[in-house]
Image 1: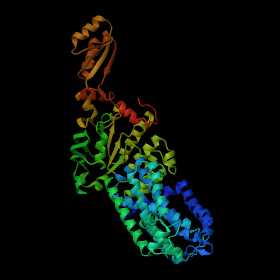
Image 2: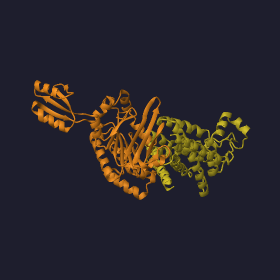
Image 3: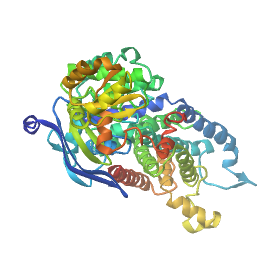
Image 4: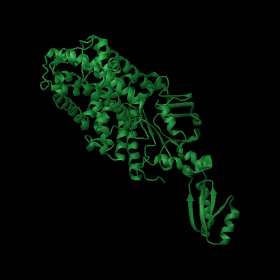
Amino acid sequence: MRTLLGAIWAIWLREVKRSIRDRGQLVGGVSRPLLWVVILGIGLNPYFRGEIYGEVQFVVPYTYLQFIFPAVIALNMLYTSVQSAVTVIWDREFGFLREILISPVPRWAVLLGKVLGGASVAMFHGLLVLSLAFFANVSLSPGRVLTGLAYMALLAFGLTSLGIVIANRLKTFESFGVFSNAVILPLYFTSASIFPIDPALTRAQTRVVFPEWLITLVEINPMTYAVDKLRGVFIGFHQFDPRMGPLVMGIMAVVFFTIAMIDFRKA
Amino acid sequence: MAVSSENPNIVEVEQLSKRYGRVLALDEVSLEVDRGETYAILGPNGSGKTTLIHVLCTIHRADSGTARISGYEVHRQPRQARKQIGVVFQEPSLDTRLTVQENLDFHGRIYGVPGRVRRARIAELLELVELGAWRDHLVRALSKGMQRRLEIARALVHDASLLILDEPTVGLDAQTRARMWEHLRELKRLREITVLVTTHYIEEVEGCDRVCILDHGKVLTVGAPAELKARHGRMTVRVLPRDEDAAALVKSAYEGVEQVGEDLVVPVADEAATEKMLAEHGARFRAFAVQRPSLEDVFLDLTGRGLRDQEAGSRDRLLAAPRSGGEPIR
């Protein structure tokens, strides 16, 4: 048991050390939220609560900056989690995978160490965003932060597993870079993260305001519910059933980890 | 464990076969390695050496047959078998973005070596492979030879009783190669380990206790180098006769004399026969050289071709080109 924990710790430590040494990843982790919060958030702020011609368009009682803030946390974690799985390809490409495969550590422990490592780094990048809360006019209480961290951890675990599932199916770094972006950005854009779907409208009404395909995309995107939960925790605003968030994040973590596990067994 | 101490052979391979598509990489290979010996598997590229190693380190499954390490069946008890072995693969398998120390530490932790033992052993091994000064450097700053030495050190951070090296000297210059073998000998003096090494460099095999010659997935012969040479090679004397008469005399006095240019190659049975020849005919020769059989001759005798003849086919050369940094391999 001690040996097993030691092994998981070693694998975790390696993932974390590697990403700390990777300046590029850190720069991305800092610049991404700044870009979204400072440039996009502040820039779009005045257009958000559209009292155009004296008519309030949306009933979201928050500034755009506040609205987008929890979503940027999710975005930053989404990027980092999925990208951290690149070590899976790296290990395979540069032979380090063999060192792990011939060790007495069971495969599930190797995978768990990797996922926890990637998730920890993602948590760190999520915290970077959280530290910008003051600038986004989001007031944090210790209770909110703790609840938020718990959900962030659950989300990071699921997303890192997703990254590993993707990495297991791709052969080269290049394709992983392209593919992960092709997964990350659509997931983010269709998660009701940068534009709200008015919770006051009924399902039928939403489909009148927005094109139907877009609503469908938003509703089937698991990230929607994760972002919604974080929003609920940090600014107390929900567009969907608050119980959906934890449920969907839990399912994501279990399903993606299981798929990754099956892949690892075969390796 | 009772199984391992009662069993004298650290490696037992029985009737192992492995097929890749249409190629039979291992064809009913059986071999045994005794505890404490240095056992070499010699064969040209594509002879099945690496496949055999991969089966032994539980990376690949054999199609049929069994392989046991210290009594543990590699298919059924892979984790116990893995604890027994330290492996240095043909291709590097270090994390070049971690330091020397971190690579060794990672290995120690995943093999469950307790902290104090781990630290002591890492320090000791780094001294041995002369990398102590590089402890905190990133591995990518190390030369190829140094990385190889680090991999050998790493394979021994845990309590491995068997050290497996797959072509450990490929891609290293002659001096580095010699040094690596020195380190291995030093290691064997310090710790009770068995070394199983594959190579296609004949000169490296000479110092090993036993050699197994593998070709096209089949074991051709096993034995100590001297024994193999005695069995399959022949000792010859190469002489340069003083004149025609001398040449004629030698040709009539001995059987199987071959003319090579002006020289005559005379097969002899042993040292005594050589001395007798020198005593009887010494005055008739201008030059006299004893040629002892080499393992190259053994291989030639067994397969009818030299080990180097097909060492690298054009396809292998093409595949190997990126590894040597684009330099064509001759």
